[in-house]
Image 1 (cartoon, rainbow, N blue to C red):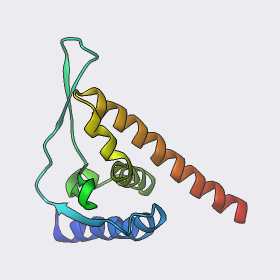
Image 2: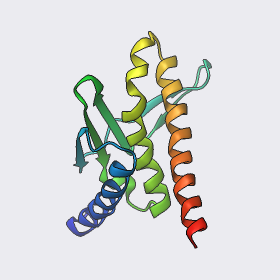
Image 3: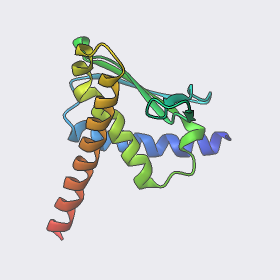
Amino acid sequence: MTDKEYNFEKRRIRKLAKLWIYQLGLTWFKLDIDYMRVPLEPVQKADGGHSKTYQWRTQMSTAIAWEYRKASICIDMSAIQGLSDDELESLFVHELCHILVNEMREYSDDDKGRKHEENVVEGLAQAFIWVRDAAKKKRK
């Protein structure tokens, strides 16, 4: 990835951050965004208890210390390259939604808590984007 491509992707993320951090009420969090030139570790996914395991390239990852209202989003800049604006926005909002619900995972002793969090976060991200888009349409 060239410096020019890196800076282009960084501007796209900053635009989303400016919009969505405020809209989701996350300005009270200390939120760092780390723009990574080194690929993030791939995620291992088991196939529903079967013998197959798949690797998915991680585009973004969020670490949260909810009790201190701190979070960090790591973004694999080469992995987001080529994503449409809508795809990038969906991913970014998804990561921000982890900040909203992450503390609930603490009460789960196994991988089910992470899976439930992913499902909730994906639903919330889609809902927030849908509501924003519906409001835009209504104003027109």
